[in-house]
Figure 1 (cartoon, chains in turn brown, yellow):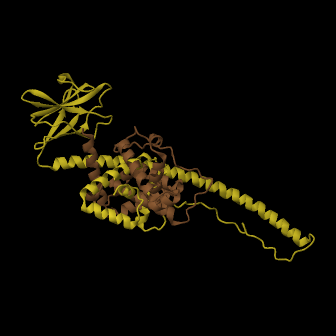
Figure 2: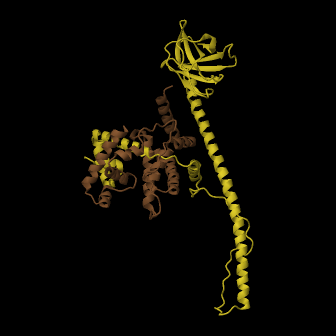
Figure 3: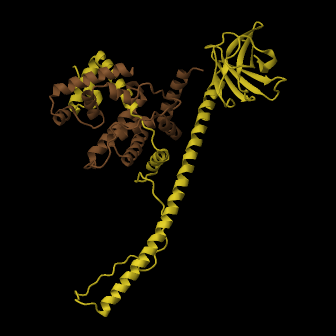
Length: 182
Length: 280
C-alpha cells in the first residue's frame, strides 16, 4: 500500500469536496491542519482565548471563500496558512491590542507535534534546535515580520538598525533554515 | 533582489513593494521558483510551532461555521443559563433620599435593618444562582464531550465513506476485473473481493468477512497463473474488515487466493492455511 499515493488521493479528494461544500471535509481539514494553524495563530496573538476566536474566524473564512482557492497557484496548506496568519495579524492590529505586563510571553512555547496519520512533520528538528542553532539576531527579524506583523521599515525602526541590515539578516536566516529544514 | 524575496515571504513588505515582487516573479520564472522555495521554508518553520489545540475547540470551530451558515451573527457558543425566576426585590438598591441626619433616627435604623436584611437575602440568592450556574456548567461540559465524540464518530464514518467511494469507482470502471474469493474449508463464511485493473495492473482487495489474523501472522495475497503462485502483497492492520487495500501490481492471473503466513510473508504459500480463493 503506497502511503504517498494515499496522501495525494486524499488531498485531491479533500479539495474536491471542499469545493463542493461537503461539510464533512471541513472536519478532516481541521484534523489535518488545526495544530499547524493554531500554533501560528497562538504565536501571533499570544492569548489562548483570542487564538480560539481567530481559529473560528479562520475556518469560517476558509469555508466561505474556498471558491477563491486555485490549485494552480499553490498548495492547500499554503493558502490556509496565509488565511490564518492574516486573520491573526488583523486581530492584533484591530483594537488597541495591549499585552498586559503580567502576561507570560509565548516566545518559546512548548511545541507539541501533532502527529496525524496524514501529515508528516519532520520531528527530528524541533523548535528548540532551531533556537539553539539559528543566530538570535536573524531569528528576531524573521519572527518580528512573520509573527508580529512588522514591515521591514518597522523592524528597522524598532531595533534601530539600517534597512539593509534587516534584509541581510532575513536572507541569512532563510538560508540557514532552508539547510536545517530540507 | 537579495533579501527582498525573503522579506516578501516573511510578510515584511508593504502592499506596493509586494506588488513589485509579484510583477517580477510573473516575468521571470526563476524568481518565482526561488520565491516558492523560500515560502516552502517558511511553511516548514511555521509548522515547527504547531500546537495541538484544546480538545473542545474542534466542536466550537465547526459549530461557528455552521452557525454562520444559519445566519447567526455570533461566533461564540451561547451558554444556556438556567436562571431561577427572580423573586421580588432582589438586588434592588434602596436609595436613601433623605438629607443627611446627624444621629440615628428610627427611620434611619429601619432603613439600615432593611438594607442588612436585603444583603442577607441577596447573598442567599447569589449562592443559589451560583450553584445553578455550576450545575449548568457541568452539563455544558458533558454536552461538549458528547459533541466531541459525535465529531469523532463522524470522522470515522467519513473514513469509511472515502474507502467506499474508492471501491465504488473501481466497481464501476468497465476495465476492472472483479474476482470473488470464497471461503474454503478453513473458513467457509469468509468473503473477499479482488479488483484487478487490466490496463494498469493495479490490484485492490476488499475484505468483507475474514477472521482476524492471530498475533505473529498476516494474510498474504497470491495471484495464481500457469500453475505458479505470485506474491501480491500483505494485508496489514488491526481492523481488516471493510477496508480497501492497494496491493502489488499483477501482470497476469487466473485466480487469486489469501493464505495466512507469518508476519512479513513467505515466498511460497502455505497451502494448508488458504482461507479464500476465487477464479477469474
